[in-house]
Image (cartoon, rainbow, N blue to C red):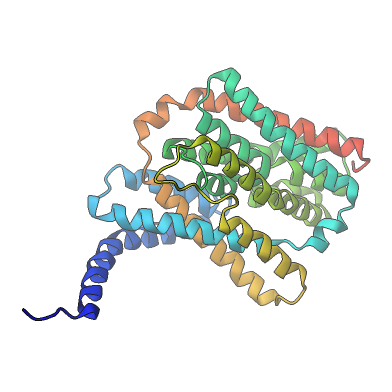
Length: 340
C-alpha cells in the first residue's frame, strides 16, 4: 500500500468545495449587477432595495446547487460591508454638529428603537420582524437590518419585510418631510437636520433634503451618518442579549462583541485620522454598496412569498407607527436643543 500525498488529498477536498460555491456565487454576482443597473436607470430605487426584491423573485425558483455558495457569500459579504461602512464617517464630522444635535441623535435612535419593539409586542408582530423594523427605522435602513440579522436568528421573511417597509415609508418621507418642513417654517439647516434624523436610508435623506438646497443636504447627510455610528453599539448590545438567550452548543457561545463590529469602529478611527484619500473613500463607498447589495440578494433568496404576504398586514401598521414615532421624537429633540 502506498502512502497518499497530503497535498493531493487537500486539493481533492478543496476543489469539490469550490465547485459547490461557484453556482451560488455566479447567481449573486448576476443579481447584484442587475440591481446596480436598476439603480442606475431609476435612482429613486436604491441598489439595496432592488437586490432584495430580485433575491426574493429568484428564490422562488432557486436551484439546489446554488444554496451553498449563496449562504457562504451572504454571511461574509455582509460583515465586510459593515466594516467598510465605518469609513463613511469620522469623529470630527460628528463633533462638528455640536453637543445638542448629537444628543438629539442619540435620544431619537434609542427612543425609536425601544418604542418600536414595544409597539411590535402590542400589535402581536413577531420578535424578529419587530427587531428588524426597530433597527432599520432607527439607524440606517437596509444596511442596519442586514447587520442586525447577522447576530440574530431572524427568519429571512422578517428581514425581507423589514427592508420592504424601510423602502415604502422612506420613500413616502421624501415627499412628506419637505412638505411638513415648509408648513412648520423650517429653514434649510433645520429641515436638513430633521431629514437626517428621521428618514431611513441615506439616499432617501438626500432626496428629502434636496428641495431646501445644498446646505440642507450637507447637514442632513452628516446627521444621518451620525445615526450610523450607533449601529456598532446597538448590534453589539443585541448580540450580547442573543448570546445569553441561545442554548450553548458544544460549549461554544457567539463572541461577546462580533469582530465585524470592532472592524467598523476601527475603520471609523482610520477615517478620523484624516489620512484616507478622497479617491479611496469614493471607491470604498461603491464597494460597500455592492457588498450590501450582494448580501441582501442572498438573504432575499430564502424568502417564501406566501409567508411574507401572511405576515405583511401588522408589519405595515408597525412601519407606519415607527415612522411617525421617529419623526415626532426627532422633531421634538431638535426643538428642545434649539436646532430648528
